[in-house]
Image (cartoon, rainbow, N blue to C red; front, side, top):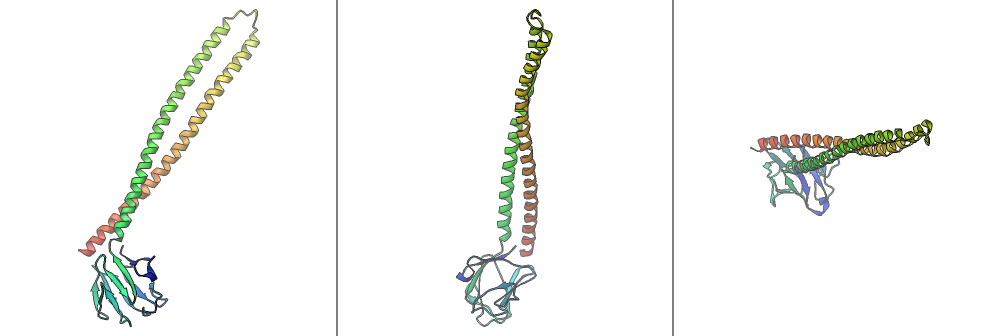
Amino acid sequence: MAVLRGLSEQVSQEVVELDADGTSVGRADNQQLVLHDGSVSGKHARIWCETKWLVQDLGSTNGTLLNGAMLDAHEVFELADGDRVSFGRVTMEFQAAGASGALAEARAALDAAEAALNAMRDEIALLRDHAAKQDEAIRSRDEALAEWERRMESVNSSWVSKEDFQKELAREKEKLDLAAQGRIDAAVRRYNEMEARYVQSQAKLETAEKSLREKEDELRLLALKRA
């Protein structure tokens, strides 16, 4: 999309998107681009796009300049990227490549989303590996518990009762379960966090890809109009 970028002091911070159907320029409040400067007429000029971008002075008091040359009132002149248009004392630069900047921003956003997505994939792969190790730790715990139980069963019942044995077995199992469960819970929480971030990154990636496609379509249309 084409824009006018302010150059003179009155509009130094302004960037105005131009309507292809027509943007009216003047000091009056009913103009689409209002320039509050005494050198600008109420209805000063008009800019629009047919196959190319055009500008027309509407019979203003102080005239419209294109790259320093005064335009004949009511005559239509073609605009090119980088042209400087002065409405009275107010000078602005015409930029037909506004879409290129937007496309560059979209591509940068896409690259950032892809980088974030790849980082999430790497983190999730590491987390899955960690979860597999946790599963192995649980199997080792079960094996250790079974071995402890076998050894306890072989102890002379004269100095340990069945009831004491069951209590000790339950305590040992509880200690092992708590330790393993804590590690499992931590791994699950981290996995869920990584998965949520992955989904968010995927959504950002899809949004960026959609924006990129839209900007590329705008560039193609702009190229066709200027052809």
